[in-house]
Length: 247
Ligand code: FPP
Image (cartoon, rainbow, N blue to C red; front, side):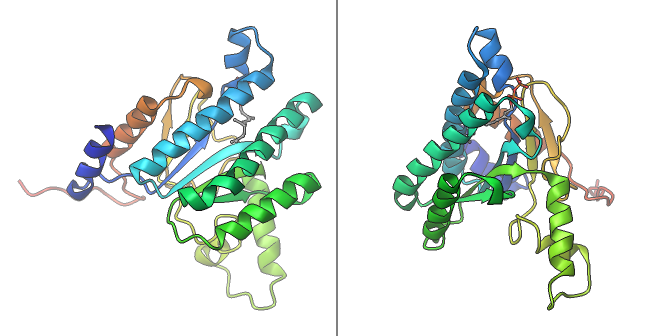
């Protein structure tokens, strides 16, 4: 029902976001509340990602970008870092099996050069399959990603490009991990925290933000519906003024 409702409104000026980005926050607290290790929270969070990614695909959302591991997350215990890397490995292995059948592209955004050779090999295999797919549905996993780091890298890549064009916002965008993708329309942060935490700093310049107290492992399709409905009520002006309606 929710799917039908949201698509029906598309022709009436309240469109489905093309690109949704999520800071998957609250895994640790979810586990703590249950007396479980933090790693159990991440495992539950990875399951929530699978469910919500399938839901977004069914709704017709073109891009879903999630913050899986930031450039700052290396400060966590080795056990926790290994657990998150293990969940990513499992997910990529599954993706290699399923992505042709499900026709969903998967990209890993971030500095992958420091990841384990095993994880890098899986990413390369996923990217090779990706090139053969024609779908518009894409899941982006941000791994060893930092928004400031991304901008610095983009500037460096531009500066060392012998064929660089004169610098502009549009030109610099081509050197970001998200080159060729639309900016996120909607950025969701669950768990009650209300900050950007170095996520998609450039790309979220005009995004709508949605915050909820729900912890990420508890985030449901109904929470996604609520976020999309809130987004559909927003008045996006991109720095301009609202066009007044004729009486
Ligand atoms: C933030 O919650 C979450 C992370 C730093 C890791 C998110 C990673 C996953 C959900 C697994 C990735 C795998 C796939 C397949 C997407 P937190 O630990 O900071 O929570 P807290 O604020 O409650 O401590």
